[in-house]
Length: 506
Image 1: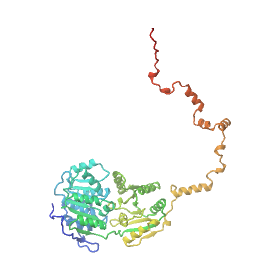
Image 2: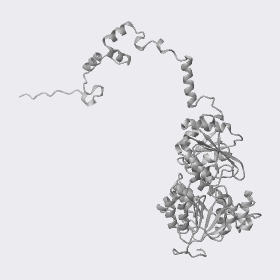
Image 3: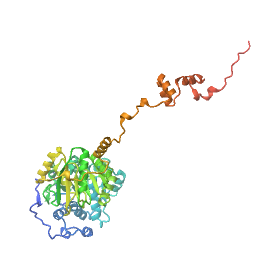
Image 4: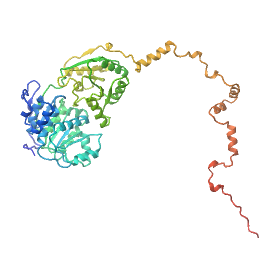
């Protein structure tokens, strides 16, 4: 299929380093897209989007992809990584045609949002490729609709690992024709437990494929996958690993450990923010996402929630609302921490300190993108000290603290602390009537006859209050009923008169 024959007894892998963090071998200064070897259709689409010069990872990766080499890309989100494989794939796919249920290329993404975003990029840059078929296989969408796309033949198949295997097990998908395999956000795949699925998928694809492997970090498990999947890859690294952007101002703020105290601190940070256009609030747990979003809404903020348990249409609608500016604050889990194209986020708030230091870098990477400035605040409670130390060790710097007492205090009612204060104030001011002056229930006035009767038979008094008849009357009515057993529901044939039989004369 390609010019390189691959066997299971391949020679030891050797990494041809295209660029490193502090010494790039291939520079992109004064370089344009036309010099990278892309086709005319792709160049016209790129020009229509307004991009003039490729980013470092694009300039270094695209020529090697067109040469059909395996790629190991180490790059943070926001570096243009997606276009570094979308553009050359479009050029390669201009030749040939997909067959029914046999995709030509496969792109694996860890989340539905990332998969949907890659689909958008293919439609944007493939606007001049009229016959290009792109299929998206993600959860939360009907199988029937996805099957129709597969039956038409997919030049590009973008999928999450779980839904891809679902289609394969149903017999709706053959992967023997895959020429290019892209594994995106590999370290995120590791965090979400998708590595066994990826290993299984790779065994279903011809070993002669071209593999493009992208990750923001390189833990030992990811290195093992690189050695397993890639053959003589070209390593492209454009920045130091786990390095926050220099344009992001990072602050820590202390808070009480109680959930309502953290929510109050968050509201104070948002109210004190300067030039807040929009913001993302990150929570560690999905259930906290919904709680924090509802709390912000109750206090007058334009907020919405985004987490993995939401329906796919609801998730995409929430993202679109945030991108279009109809939503100011997006409360999200780590599903929004990587890869999403949200270029103009001005503030990021960590409602919870992330337990993994790498996640902190990805979260605050949602702001300060494309040379913009941004601000990131992390709410820290007493038990979070070890996580903060891990973050400071990773980024190799000490973070500054914000005085939580200087944040604006809440004046409006509705907060938990405010409700308790109002309750105490009412008690102190005497708003509540003195219970000693209230007549007791037993001392309230009753008619004399009723009082006397209740003294003799208190049970009958309770029955009379409920509208029930005295027990004697109810017993008398039952005795007067001549339809004992059937009452008012005696069958009609039992009510017919019976003629007496006369004996015959002897």
